[in-house]
Length: 209
Image (tube, rainbow, N blue to C red; front, side, top):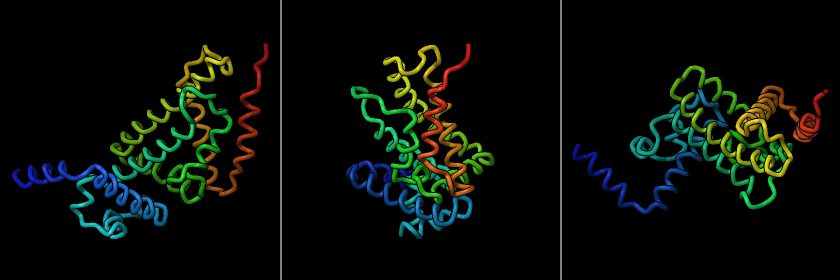
């Protein structure tokens, strides 16, 4: 107990910049391992070797692979949220959402096929691991909130029906992008321009009387 208390005190005395840099070092190493070897085949020992850190140094920040991948996805979604801009400006076009995804630099949301394959592996692992599924559910709730804010801005401007809850529209958009990334992972021939054109056509369609 004394040793743990000493460690907590030492951590609290370290500058935030140092803690953030170490966390980034670990996540960057894990990201490289996951993209290169796949999520399931990567061990924590692989991450330790890639980061050049001790077991204790890594486990002080992350409890295991589930925590690492949840943090990686969360960071990627933070980039995506930043791409949508603030509430004061014009809302981004919803049919350009795939472009926003492809502009994210961090796997597993970046535009590379390797990144898309990693995302599919993470989904598959979440079927086996309730802990990972729970972490991803929290992250995706944050993603729905971000997109829901964009949808609300469109609704306020009369660009989308106001009688459909924003979170429902956001969920449908996420599902569409998930499908795009799945095709990219499996077939490697997903075309962002074609996806955007198809999405634009669907969004402009009007139901019959």
